[in-house]
Length: 267
Image (cartoon, rainbow, N blue to C red; front, side, top):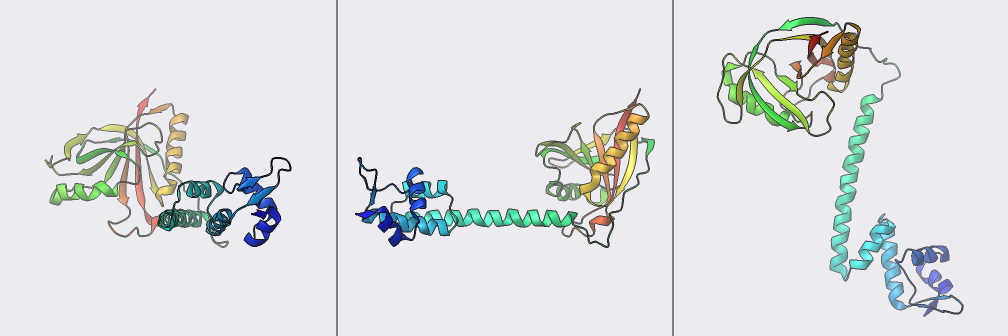
């Protein structure tokens, strides 16, 4: 048996850390003198300490170490835990890279000033549009899952740019009620695709030039106009993608062109 000072020396773990590990029940000494409270460690404790040092060097948290020690019976078990931790680290790296990429979108060169978008607002009548449509619930950026199917259904009957209809009055995280449409020359029939007519509406309209990340500013301009002129915005609103990403390449986001159409009721 080893006294705590001796055990500290042979494991390269400080006495303070050993006491902490004892409190956290991941390295409890084999024997504790009930009279003095002194801790004494065994050969098995030495083996466990070596495993703890390994896991700490691999950035396992205290909770993770406890989980491993409670359930790890042999080296094959340890290998499984290490593989699982490796997957977690890889996923975290991907998240961090995505975060860096997102940050880069907002970091502008010092010699480049942010251009403020000036929106021209119109209230106009939008005529009926014949479309092929797929209505679905999902994320706003999932349009790519459906656009190919629509083009396949429409073939040579296309008659305009893609339209996304938003059937929710508010922003939705992950379960938005969306309807992707392609204008067509005639009503078409195709599995899981609806041939229909988007009704004629009176709407506040504007055009956004640039990244989809800033589309919210176009909506703000529309809602500000509606409030100033006593107009009530209703759903579904529409976005017409006059110029955007291709099926493979995103292209230059600064040159995307999107028409925003928000139906209104007067009074």
